[in-house]
Length: 309
Ligand SMILES: NC(=O)c1ccc[n+]([C@@H]2O[C@H](COP(=O)([O-])OP(=O)(O)OC[C@H]3O[C@@H](n4cnc5c(N)ncnc54)[C@H](OP(=O)(O)O)[C@@H]3O)[C@@H](O)[C@H]2O)c1
Figure 1 (cartoon, rainbow, N blue to C red):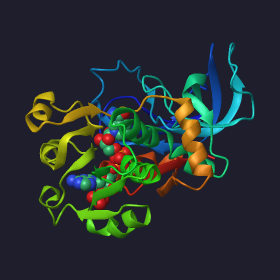
Figure 2 (tube, rainbow, N blue to C red):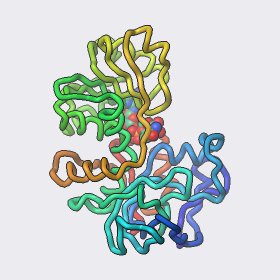
Figure 3 (cartoon, rainbow, N blue to C red):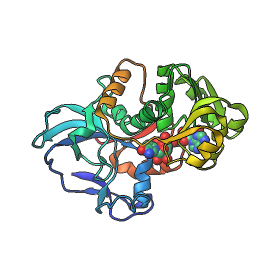
C-alpha cells in the first residue's frame, strides 16, 4: 500500500510517500481502508522527535492519528464493527498512524462517522473535538451561563471549543489574529480579541474557565483573568499548581483520550447541525509535507486534512 512514513526524525523533508506493508488486524482490531487522515500538531511533533523520550516508536513510522474510512476486515473478538461500516476515530498514538491506504485500529478507538459529513470532514473531528470536549466538560465542568476565554479559538481545538461552549450555553470570548475575528463570530464567539493588538488580560476579567492551547507567556498571563475558584485547562502540559494556588484558582490538563461514547455524542451534534467540523485545507496524501508545513506555521484555521481516496 502507499503510505507516508518517516525513517528518521527531522524536518518536513523526512516524510516519504512510499510503499509500505499492508497491516493485518489482530484480536480486537479492525483493518480500516483510509479515506481521509486529519493533520494535527502532534504529527509534526512526533516527526521532529519531541515525543521520542516518552514513546519508543519503531521506525519507519506512519504518522497521522485522526482517521475516517471504511472497515475492510475485522480481527477475532471484534463485536462493534463489521466490513463496510463507515467509521472515524483516534488511533493509538503509540502505533502506526493513518497517513496510508490502510490502518489497523483498536475497535475501542472507533465510532461510526457522522452520517451528514464526508470522510474528509469526519477525519477533521476526533483528536481536536475530543480534546475540546474533555477539556470543557470533563475537566472544567463548563456549565450554561458561565464565561470562558478560549485561546487560539480559530485553531483545530479552539474552533470545536467555541462551538461546544456555545452549544452548552456559555458566554465565549476567543483570541485570534485580525483575519480570523469575523470568522470566529460566525462560528459562535460572543466576543473576539486580536491578540496582536490587545492584551487580553487588559479587557477580560472574571472568567469561569480559560482554555489554553498555547502555553508559555499566554498561560502565565491567563491566571489573572479567572475569577476566584475558576479553572485554567491547558492542552500543552500540566499548568503550575503553585501559580493556581497563588491566584486562588484551579488548573487541569486537557489530553485527548479515545472515547467512542463521546465521539457518538459529537457525531450526533454534527448530524443535528449544532456543530461543524471546519476544514481549511484538503491535500492529497502525497502532499503530507505541505500539510506539515502549514500546521507547523501555527496559523491553521480549523483543520487540514489529507484525502487518501
Ligand atoms: N494534549 C493533547 O492531547 C492535545 C490534543 C490536541 C492538541 N494539543 C495541542 O494543543 C495545541 C493546539 O492544537 P490545535 O490543533 O488547536 O492547533 P492549531 O490548529 O495548529 O492552532 C492554530 C491556531 O493557533 C492560533 N494562534 C497561534 N498563536 C496564537 C496566539 N498567540 N494567540 C491566540 N491564537 C494563536 C492561530 O490563529 P491565528 O492564525 O489567528 O494566529 C491558529 O488558528 C497544540 O500544541 C497541540 O499539540 C494537545
